[in-house]
Length: 261
Ligand code: CO8
Image (cartoon, rainbow, N blue to C red; front, top):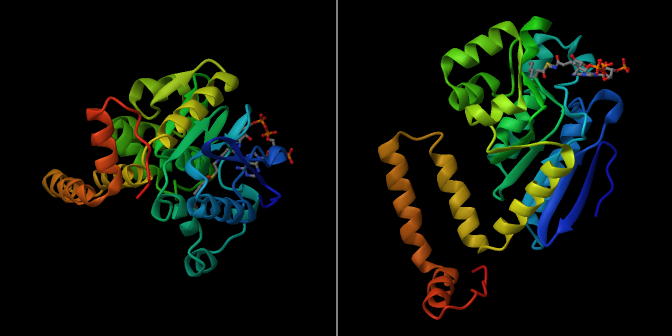
């Protein structure tokens, strides 16, 4: 396992890789060096045969308090535009084929909220503090917040949050469907996130990958095209070994021994 300065990586359970954002002095503010490390760790887990699922978390106090404001303060339009500032953040959604479970406790603000929204499954504590406060800094969300939050909670609520800069709690995130489940504290949150990751990691890698791919298509495609896309991928899985393994094991009342082929 590589050593990083602003994140930690571990493999806490079979098939599970964990990335912990670890820049406590700045509440895990997402500086460029941190994002470079995060992308490198995600890439390493995505390529690793021993990992099927990634859990992404921060600390009890902060998942991430946003983009690094001190780094952005003096950025010019030309610099931001020509270096495609923030674009590399989407690495998580565009390049990683394995499922990512986000486990959020404490602050998930601005870019931190957007990073949480990019995760495939989101768990959080009831007291987590989500929000898009960019308007208070004289700017707007820049890493997908206006699009993903709006899809997740509807236009009126998203508009209210983004225009006022007010936050929303983990409890609300659960009620609104932003988070799949909410938990009392950080320990319960992590236990549940790792347990779910382990459950997923017990399935066929081919099926896991296809499942993530088709669910994500629902975010981009009109329903009819999405359903057709799903059917194509479903048909293609009759070409996998694991479909035969899984259905044969069911008929024989045995546990499937996945070949991951
Ligand atoms: N960037 C840099 N440093 C930060 C950040 C941040 N986003 N958040 C906190 N820190 C630092 C603080 O400056 C402080 O450092 P120091 O001890 O050196 O003064 C340390 O972390 C601890 O923070 P606080 O003392 O403020 O801790 P509190 O518990 O009092 O408050 C808060 C916690 C409420 C989270 C508070 O720190 C805060 O409001 N942070 C900023 C939240 C924010 O506005 N985030 C949005 C940033 S903008 C963004 O993410 C845009 C993404 C895409 C933009 C694209 C533009 C092109």
